[in-house]
Image 1 (tube, rainbow, N blue to C red):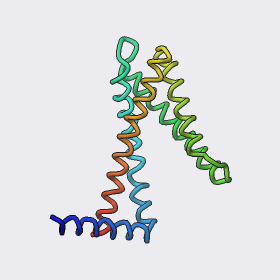
Image 2 (cartoon, rainbow, N blue to C red; image 1 turned 90 degrees about the vertical axis):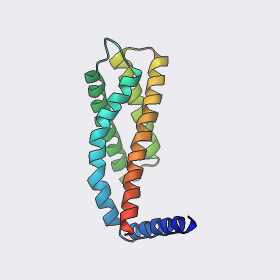
Image 3 (cartoon, rainbow, N blue to C red; image 1 turned 60 degrees about the vertical axis):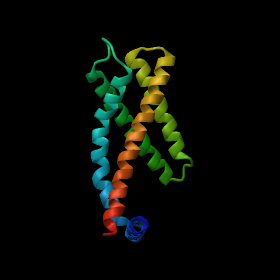
Image 4 (cartoon, one colour; image 1 turned 90 degrees about the horizontal axis):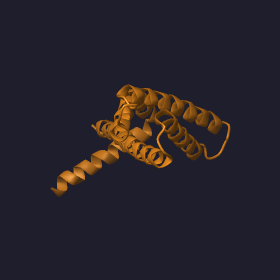
Amino acid sequence: SRNDVAEGFNRVVSGVDALVSDPVKFNESVNLWLPRVMFFMAPILAIILALFIRGRGALFFDHLVLSLYSHAAGFAIFGAAILLGQFGAPQMLPVSVVLLGLYFTLALKRAYGRGWQKTLWTSGMSAFLYFVILVSIVTSIIGERIWTSAA
């Protein structure tokens, strides 16, 4: 009913207001959950890769190793971007996204030796699925934090 929608909207607004007024509390939940989410995203990326790359030279273990290397490279790239951003380097987010995409594409090409068309397709689609899953999980965490902060 209309009343339920209004109550839900008011709860969300008050939850956002509570988190904005106490950002340390919000950061605590993000800092608690984000490492856990990223830990589980490594095997999720391996599963996504298994959807696109199959055959004799593509065991799940291979996908998991590539996923772990890709996550390590991502942490290094984004860590460097954060540090450089602290010193005033501009546009570090888009630069780091491009670098990570380039690394991932080249890693796929080298690891599986497929043609460029298949490699680019696999890279783009797996990155898209990975991003959708990651954003969904992070949005759920933030939504839960907003909802419980209003209670």
